Image 1 (cartoon, rainbow, N blue to C red):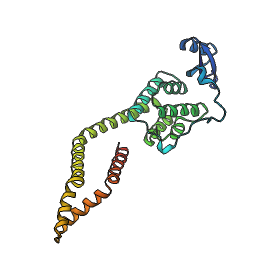
Image 2 (cartoon, rainbow, N blue to C red):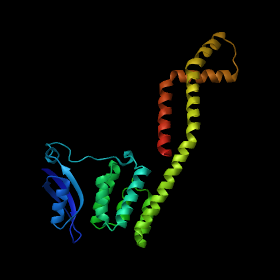
Image 3 (tube, rainbow, N blue to C red):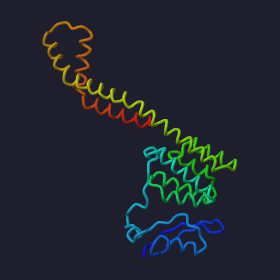
Image 4 (tube, rainbow, N blue to C red):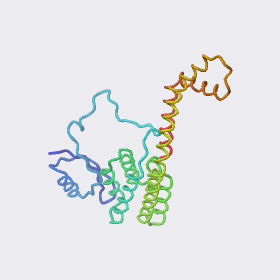
Length: 252
């Protein structure tokens, strides 16, 4: 016998939640239907998970918004297509959101869907609820959903949103393929430059300094570059790795 925590909608539209015991998921759903409710979320809870937290333990976790990862285009496309299909089949919006939240494998998206479902069940529009989660639902996405709600063509607009996202995903893949070879060449050039300034130039620099002659400007510049990298080689490497990571994050 397992313990299930459920959230369901009554015929009046009000949301209810509670805990029940059932041998399996199908029996739990049957019990909810027998009460005249429509399940929107159903989770199995073991005894350890349902036990109260020890004294002094934190009540809930929190996230820093700008450190929260964005939802990928592929995850957003899948969510949009599934939501469109469910609404087109006549499923209520809150029920559809509840099912999609339970099925999502992306933690940020699942948390956003759960909050959107809660907001919608309390009277917010889908646009208002999604606008509160800009790291999951971009501004253009929310604007198109708003247009669909205002015109009464939400399912058609969701289909159009999915098409736009799919086109963006395809374009991104083409860009990645087109820039792969130049990226490899650039990395090889950077590695060759680092080997040059770390291992080759210092030997020539010591040789030129030992001659005591007045060296030309290009040679003095090379020796200065060599000295700089020799003194701050690890710092330069860390800076280059950080810059490459930041560029990749902003680009893709």
